[in-house]
Image (cartoon, rainbow, N blue to C red; front, side):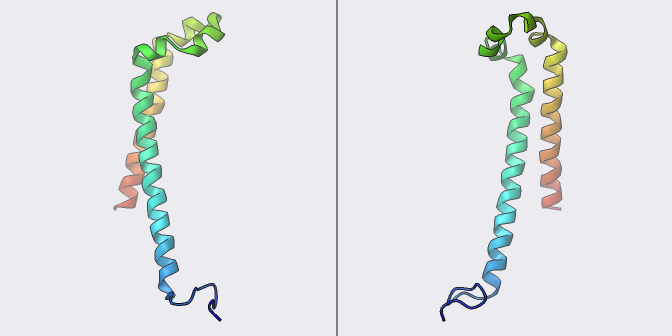
Length: 96
C-alpha cells in the first residue's frame, strides 16, 4: 500500500504541486534564456566575417549577392531584435 492516489509513501500532497510549479518556472527561465541568446546571435552574426565565409554560400553562388546584401543582414538582425523583445517580455510577465 505504498502508493495511494499517485503519491509515494512519505510524500505529502503538496510536493507534486511544488514540483510542477518548479518545472514550469524552470521551463520559463530556459525559454527566456533561449530567446535572448538566439536574439543576440541573430543581431550580431550577420555583421561578422563568419557570415561572409559561410559553407552555404558555396552551394548557391548565384545567390551570393542576396546573402551579402545589407537588406538581408538587416532583416536577420530585425528578427534577432524580435527574439530579444520576446525574451524580455516573457521575463517581465514571469516576474511581474
